Amino acid sequence: MKDLIDVDPSLTGRITCGTLRAGDVGREVTINGWVHRRRDLGGLIFIDLRDRFGLTQVVFNPQVAPDVHEAASDLRNEYVLRVRGIVRARPEGTVNTKLATGEVEVEVHGLDVLNESKTPPFDINQDVDVDEALRLKHRYLDLRRPKMARNIILRHQMVHAMREYLIARGFVEVETPTLIKSTPEGARDFLVPSSANPGNFYALPQSPQQLKQLLMISGFDRYFQVARCYRDEAQRADRQPEFTQLDIEMTFVEQEDLMGLIEQLYIELTETFSAKRIQQKPFPRITYAESMRRFGNDRPDMRFGVELQDVSAAFAGTQFNAFAQTLASGGQIKAIVVPGCAEYTRREIDELTEMAKRSGAKGLATFAVKADETRSPIAKFLTPEEMAAITAGIGAVPGDLVLAVADAPNVVAKTLSALRDEIGRRLSLADPNVFAFCWVYEFPLLEYNEDEGRWEATHNPFSGFLAEDAHLIATDPSKVRAKQYDLVGNGFELGGGSVRNHRRSDQEAMFALMGYPKEDLEARFGALLEALDYGAPPHGGIAMGVDRFAMLLAEADNIREVIAFPKNQRGHDVMFGAPDQVVTQQLDDLGLVLDQKKAVDLW
Image 1 (cartoon, rainbow, N blue to C red):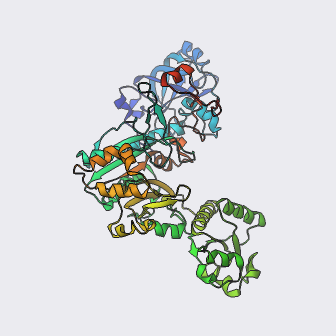
Image 2 (cartoon, one colour):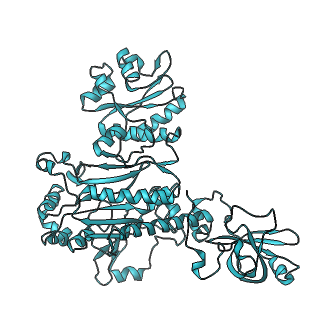
Image 3 (cartoon, rainbow, N blue to C red):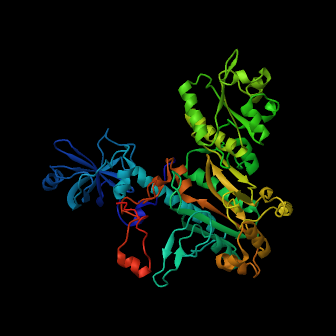
């Protein structure tokens, strides 16, 4: 990651631990900070004093200020100090080139211990692994660590750059409410009971979706917001129950306008805050169908190959029952070539097979390509022509391992996508020094929910659709392509959006496909539907995940590393002890009664 340039410390109106340079020699200064490291050399005592701007070495000399030197003997790490002294050039041979302040030190003649500190539960002055539960419990200490402070400053600077970029292009920042009506957005809402209106609830917004569309109808043609959003869903490394997105909406635009705006922004952010190069500019653009065909998912990591290859045609007349039955039932057979892994052990093959089964596949067919033959547990069931088609026919060479899955198309895609990602990690196939961005577009507008027997929006229910697919809405909704687009980076979905329905008739047709009774529309979406009747302009937008991109720029393993006070993987705030139970009086005020059978005492 590139060195970050924070604000000029001199502009803060005080001397910080990152201020002093050779030009300050002879100056009398006062500095505040924490004891980062202490070294007692028997005569002189050296302390590295730390704040978020950096480190400054201060020296306690018994010949200069004996009382102050004696007091310094009791100082320990994380004590809070105010020191007064004279800036001196460091003696020859002791300059620290790793510090911005490394040419100078402060010879101390005055000391105030502003606060003492207990011994921290983990080292703050060393970049060592610490159990995350302990770090989150004492997050205020964790944030003192230079690496974490750096991550938070990086995020701050990234968001500042986003704001500057958009404001310069005529966007207006507008805040929208965080207490709204519960509407279907794809995940469970967090609900907030209203004491003034017993039995009624607000919801925390999963996104400002309807509100930003209403702003377009209001005439604010270019809106953005660094918006807090809330989703009550399962946690993972790149997900939090509360998160931040850069929310954008524009009028009189097509998807090319939105994609161009965001592409240039992300080029500038990457080149400003990362030393990594961008693999390809302009960003590649692939349709959803192509992404699924080549990579098995809609967030492809394009830093390496190992693409999915369809070998179904080679087995059209196979006598191997597992393959024949799959093809007869409308399934497919696809494979990936794993370079240089023909010598994988039985244990390694079993690990991959178990991974395939966890993804839903019935099994995994493997083919080890040798110089003189191809070995496979199922070789005896296949003809020489079929063996050739699944090896040399897809570009496998001696030394390679071929992994094949025969199943329903969605299972094949999910399984080989997971295997491809795993192989990429195991073999370090992805170039660690690049950002590989791409756009994925033309998503299906709808997907069928078998359990509920109705169509659901793949992204959100407000997306427009391609005009050439309009005739399919009544006959084959699964083939209708949406005006939707996602930006993907290094295998992560960074954000997505769509051009919206701006005519009421189109929006109501979408709701009808999703099975909403007409009488429910007014209660759920009445404000937006009515607004569409009042000269709603064509509009579209996008929402970009701030946390996720900050994570990638910081080269962190999960988004908790770039959030000041995150929840853990179970959605718990272990520092404050939340969520927590409340007293009976609070429930009575709200007119609520707990089901004690479901209540859980977390703490």
